[in-house]
Structures are given as C-alpha cells and as structure tokens.
Amino acid sequence: MARDGSVFRKHSQYEYRVVTFDPDTTVPDASKLLTEEAEYGRWELARTLLYIGGRRKVWLRRKIIKVSSTL
Image 1: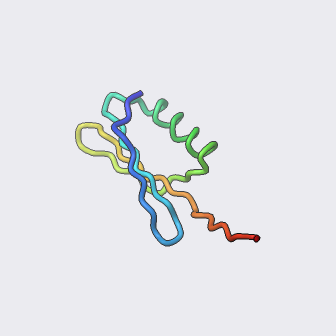
Image 2: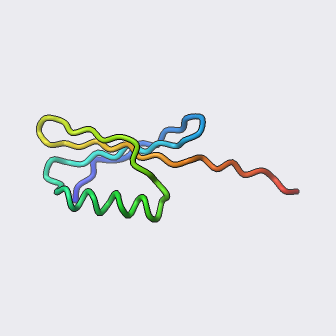
C-alpha cells in the first residue's frame, strides 16, 4: 500500500487531513486504510477525487473538540 503523504489543516469546526494514494494502490487496500483511520482516529470521509492516471486524493475530517479548564 503506497501513500504519498498527508496534510493536516484546521478550519473553524473541523480538522482536515488530505491523504493521497498512488495509482498502484488497490481499492480494497485504500478502503482498509480509510476504515482504520475512521475507526481509530475518528476521521470521517469528506471528499474524494480520482485523477487521470489513477491517483486518488481523499479528504478526511473530524470535529475539533475544545477542552476548557476545570481548575
């Protein structure tokens, strides 16, 4: 399974992560990785993009939880 890298970005209510898959990554392998991210990292699928040549870019997002001090 090949992954070019990921980028983290923060917006007002959500934190975004961009994951890029190489063309030689199979759909079941990509699905397995995204399922693990969703299950353990609490990420949800926000957007997908398939480029000519087979490269895939996937945007994941999760809600930002703001913790307030109790002291």
